[in-house]
Image (cartoon, rainbow, N blue to C red; front, side, top):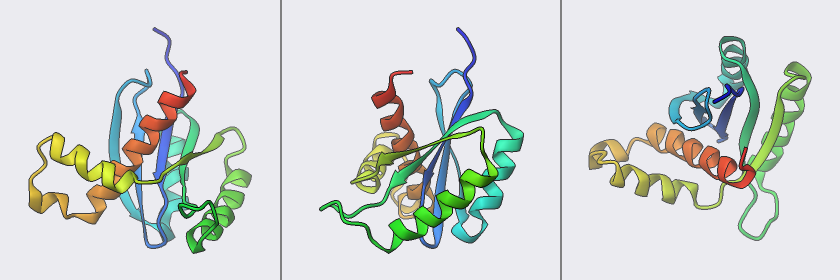
Length: 141
Protein backbone atom coordinates (compact mmCIF):
# COMPACT_ATOMS: atom_id res chain seq x y z
CA UNK A 1 0.00 0.00 0.00
CA UNK A 2 1.40 3.38 -0.89
CA UNK A 3 1.91 6.16 1.58
CA UNK A 4 -0.26 9.23 1.17
CA UNK A 5 0.24 12.67 2.50
CA UNK A 6 -1.66 13.01 5.73
CA UNK A 7 -4.92 14.91 6.10
CA UNK A 8 -5.43 17.34 8.94
CA UNK A 9 -9.01 18.07 10.04
CA UNK A 10 -9.96 21.27 11.81
CA UNK A 11 -13.11 21.89 13.86
CA UNK A 12 -12.84 25.69 13.81
CA UNK A 13 -14.30 27.60 16.73
CA UNK A 14 -14.17 31.25 17.70
CA UNK A 15 -12.34 30.45 20.96
CA UNK A 16 -11.13 26.85 20.66
CA UNK A 17 -10.35 24.62 17.71
CA UNK A 18 -10.21 20.84 17.64
CA UNK A 19 -7.67 19.04 15.47
CA UNK A 20 -7.50 15.47 14.17
CA UNK A 21 -5.11 13.86 11.70
CA UNK A 22 -5.08 10.81 9.48
CA UNK A 23 -2.29 8.29 9.61
CA UNK A 24 0.01 7.99 6.59
CA UNK A 25 -2.19 5.27 5.04
CA UNK A 26 -5.36 7.38 5.45
CA UNK A 27 -7.00 4.58 7.43
CA UNK A 28 -6.44 5.59 11.06
CA UNK A 29 -7.82 8.89 12.28
CA UNK A 30 -6.48 10.24 15.54
CA UNK A 31 -7.79 13.07 17.69
CA UNK A 32 -4.79 15.34 18.02
CA UNK A 33 -5.27 18.40 20.13
CA UNK A 34 -7.50 21.33 21.02
CA UNK A 35 -5.83 24.69 20.66
CA UNK A 36 -6.94 28.24 21.41
CA UNK A 37 -8.03 29.62 18.03
CA UNK A 38 -5.64 32.55 18.54
CA UNK A 39 -2.77 30.02 18.30
CA UNK A 40 -4.25 27.96 15.47
CA UNK A 41 -2.15 29.34 12.61
CA UNK A 42 1.03 28.60 14.55
CA UNK A 43 -0.18 25.08 15.41
CA UNK A 44 -1.09 24.25 11.79
CA UNK A 45 2.23 25.57 10.45
CA UNK A 46 4.09 23.52 13.07
CA UNK A 47 2.17 20.35 12.12
CA UNK A 48 2.74 20.98 8.41
CA UNK A 49 6.45 21.20 9.12
CA UNK A 50 6.48 18.06 11.27
CA UNK A 51 4.31 15.82 9.08
CA UNK A 52 3.73 15.56 5.40
CA UNK A 53 0.27 17.09 5.19
CA UNK A 54 -1.33 17.14 1.75
CA UNK A 55 -4.79 18.36 2.67
CA UNK A 56 -6.38 20.34 5.47
CA UNK A 57 -10.13 19.91 5.86
CA UNK A 58 -12.05 22.56 7.76
CA UNK A 59 -15.54 22.04 9.07
CA UNK A 60 -17.86 24.34 7.14
CA UNK A 61 -19.52 26.48 9.77
CA UNK A 62 -22.61 27.80 7.99
CA UNK A 63 -25.95 27.82 9.77
CA UNK A 64 -28.44 25.04 8.99
CA UNK A 65 -30.21 27.26 6.43
CA UNK A 66 -26.92 27.79 4.60
CA UNK A 67 -26.37 31.39 5.64
CA UNK A 68 -22.97 32.42 6.98
CA UNK A 69 -22.54 33.29 10.66
CA UNK A 70 -19.84 35.13 12.64
CA UNK A 71 -17.72 32.00 12.65
CA UNK A 72 -17.94 31.77 8.85
CA UNK A 73 -16.44 35.22 8.32
CA UNK A 74 -13.67 34.47 10.85
CA UNK A 75 -12.96 31.20 9.05
CA UNK A 76 -12.88 32.84 5.61
CA UNK A 77 -10.30 35.36 6.83
CA UNK A 78 -8.26 32.61 8.46
CA UNK A 79 -8.29 30.49 5.29
CA UNK A 80 -7.18 33.43 3.18
CA UNK A 81 -4.11 33.88 5.42
CA UNK A 82 -3.42 30.15 5.60
CA UNK A 83 -3.44 29.78 1.80
CA UNK A 84 -0.68 32.37 1.49
CA UNK A 85 1.49 30.47 4.01
CA UNK A 86 0.86 26.90 2.84
CA UNK A 87 0.73 27.15 -0.92
CA UNK A 88 1.39 23.41 -1.52
CA UNK A 89 -1.42 22.18 0.73
CA UNK A 90 -4.95 21.55 -0.55
CA UNK A 91 -7.56 23.25 1.64
CA UNK A 92 -11.07 21.78 1.66
CA UNK A 93 -14.36 22.40 3.43
CA UNK A 94 -16.54 19.59 4.73
CA UNK A 95 -20.03 20.04 6.13
CA UNK A 96 -19.84 19.96 9.90
CA UNK A 97 -23.57 20.01 10.69
CA UNK A 98 -24.30 17.93 13.79
CA UNK A 99 -20.68 16.89 14.28
CA UNK A 100 -20.75 17.71 18.00
CA UNK A 101 -23.84 15.50 18.47
CA UNK A 102 -22.12 12.72 16.53
CA UNK A 103 -18.91 13.32 18.48
CA UNK A 104 -20.70 12.81 21.78
CA UNK A 105 -22.24 9.59 20.47
CA UNK A 106 -18.84 8.40 19.27
CA UNK A 107 -17.42 9.00 22.74
CA UNK A 108 -20.28 7.05 24.32
CA UNK A 109 -19.72 4.20 21.85
CA UNK A 110 -16.02 4.10 22.56
CA UNK A 111 -16.56 3.96 26.30
CA UNK A 112 -15.44 7.45 27.28
CA UNK A 113 -16.64 8.13 30.84
CA UNK A 114 -19.45 10.66 31.27
CA UNK A 115 -17.29 13.16 33.18
CA UNK A 116 -14.69 13.17 30.41
CA UNK A 117 -17.38 13.51 27.72
CA UNK A 118 -18.25 16.88 29.22
CA UNK A 119 -14.75 18.11 28.36
CA UNK A 120 -15.36 20.56 25.54
CA UNK A 121 -11.78 20.13 24.29
CA UNK A 122 -12.39 16.43 23.74
CA UNK A 123 -15.68 17.10 21.94
CA UNK A 124 -13.83 19.51 19.61
CA UNK A 125 -11.21 16.88 18.80
CA UNK A 126 -13.86 14.22 18.18
CA UNK A 127 -15.75 16.67 15.94
CA UNK A 128 -12.54 17.06 13.94
CA UNK A 129 -12.32 13.25 13.73
CA UNK A 130 -15.84 13.15 12.28
CA UNK A 131 -15.09 15.95 9.79
CA UNK A 132 -12.11 13.91 8.59
CA UNK A 133 -14.13 10.69 8.47
CA UNK A 134 -16.83 12.38 6.36
CA UNK A 135 -14.20 13.85 4.07
CA UNK A 136 -12.51 10.48 3.52
CA UNK A 137 -15.88 8.82 2.86
CA UNK A 138 -16.88 11.48 0.36
CA UNK A 139 -13.59 11.54 -1.55
CA UNK A 140 -12.80 7.80 -1.65
CA UNK A 141 -9.08 8.43 -2.06
